[in-house]
Image (cartoon, rainbow, N blue to C red; front, side, top):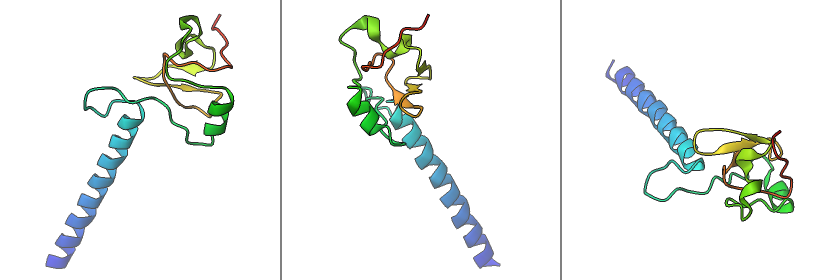
Amino acid sequence: MHNDNSRRQFLTRLGIGALVATGAAALAACGKGGGGAPTACTDPSGGSKPQRDALKYVDNAADQTKRCDICIQYVAGEGCGTCKIFNNTAVAPAGTCDSFAKKS
C-alpha cells in the first residue's frame, strides 16, 4: 500500500509541475513573466518566422499610425495580441509590419 501512495504522490506532483511549466511559458510569451522589463511579444512558432521576416515585423512601430493594435489583422489579448497573418501567434500592440491595414 505504501507504493500506491508514493506513486499517487509522484503523479500528482508531476501533473502540478507540468501545469506550472505550461503557465510560466504562456506568461513569458506575452512578457508577463515578472522580473521588471516586459519581454517582446514575438512568438515565431507555428511557422510564422518566415512571414514575420518577409513582412518586416517589429515590436515597436516607428510610425504610430501603423500600429498592430489598429490593424484589421490584430486580435486583442491581455498584454500581447495575436495576428491573423502570422498564424494567430503573439504580436505586440505597438508593433507593425509591411502588411498593415487600418481598421475601418
